[in-house]
Length: 210
Image 1 (spheres, rainbow, N blue to C red):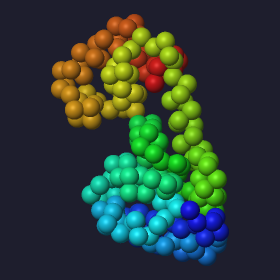
Image 2: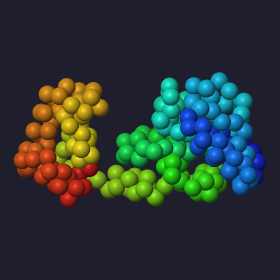
Image 3: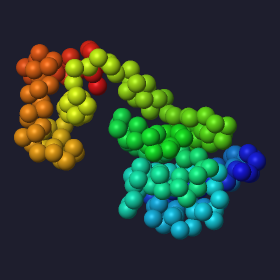
């Protein structure tokens, strides 16, 4: 590993303005050096080992291989690297998937560069920095009621109902039939002793089921 003032950074981000902006500011306002930037993981995968990065700043919504799927591949190529996710998405599933796949930090794209530079320092020191909104989502997910009467699949469906998805969208997202969603929804209503979507959402929030 390189000593901290010389730590090498690679940015993988498809938005050229964001990519170049972060690279410029990190190079000019921090002790770290951006050694390469790429518009996608697919463009980076054959070259990134030669860049020898200590930290990778990785966007989630990339053309081709997305950031979540790129994570384990990057960790395989560079086992010692720290990866900070950068995204407009902060859904619980996306955050938990990223952390499960080896992300060291997670920030939304409205994060000021100074905070990102601080995050680089944190991960190099073994920390796991996150935007406050992301940290809140993670904490809430850990505070779910362990005595929930719902199965894992029912909980997933209830989560999607609470964010306003309809049966068709839920079926598509979970790769199941609309009829299956209907059956699960009926079971959720029975278990929660409710008769409507609004009631189900209220009980889910009150009892911390999602």
